[in-house]
Length: 421
Image 1 (spheres, one colour):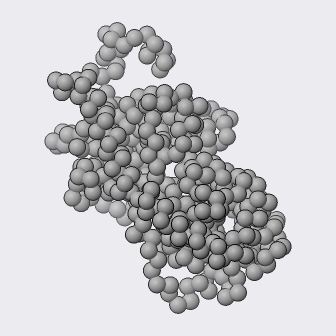
Image 2 (cartoon, rainbow, N blue to C red; image 1 turned 30 degrees about the vertical axis):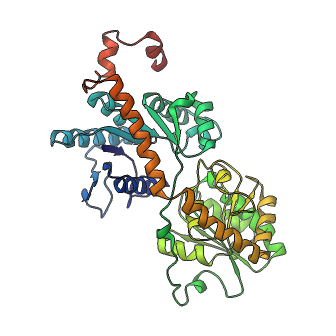
Image 3 (cartoon, rainbow, N blue to C red; image 1 turned 120 degrees about the vertical axis):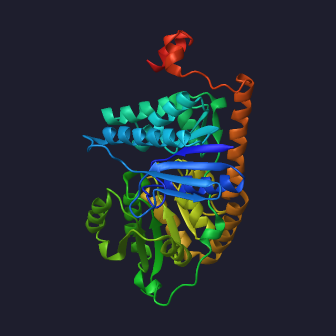
């Protein structure tokens, strides 16, 4: 089996969680004997082509004039993906299916599906409707339309949580039998804590301070403003706490200002970007790791913290609420509620012995349910299910004609033409 995977981010180009998801899924599939070719944008300092065993990564440069806007850049990216795929096919590569990650790859994915007659899988990591609690402008409506279109074109849609399954059904009216729920995962071995270098902890907190740690992209839906408000309340009852916030993002300056208004800026350390080793060390040293998201389809950072054995507190929203069982492998607070978050933080800092049991359980849950090797196997089963269905539909092995040709010849029922306008 040869899978063509399209993703707009892939390490070292990391914007959000998709990059690591695609990388880890690709390696997991390869471990199952699946050949994978990832097509992704070029990244500074990274080779344009990498091959390691059954995994190939094609990083595509952009040779277009400067786009006028964001949607233009997305369209150019899809032309680049399509051009690279055609070159691969011309060079003799043959693919069994195409797997697209999020709406940014929708145009190329659809063209490859119909042009090469390949089954299309789509993983929807989040929706524009969910990220913004509704659709409030033309750009958001346009992105949501593309998400619907990608789901419509896909043979199977993969989502990572029961919450996301419900969102896809509600927002896009997807039939339940088209969706496959396959969670995100981690490789537990990557989160074994290395020896703590001398003086490392002192870079982030004084010896008598207890560390509250958050890491992630600094965007509205991650709820860091709620964490700052909760931390201000916590300090009134637990003054020896220190908040460490790692990550970059468009809300970074606003969060700095919010901390100043709350009068806690001197007790908050905004680190900016940190590498994975530093993150793992902080997971190990932290007295509480907090993810207070307002919207979180899954929350892979929670799995990373659990794999590292960190004491975990999350907002009870989306996939986070499914991963964490309150009092068993972590704690949950009401989403968007600083008082609830502060109360749970206080309990965690005051009860380190009881927290230790939850940390051990969290590590065990990751090994049992969220190891990428298990998740990759479930993905292979979904692929094989569709390839079996395709073989029944096309026993001669001849690819179906493109949608546009069938539409011109009147080969599609009216309801399909109406569905896409």
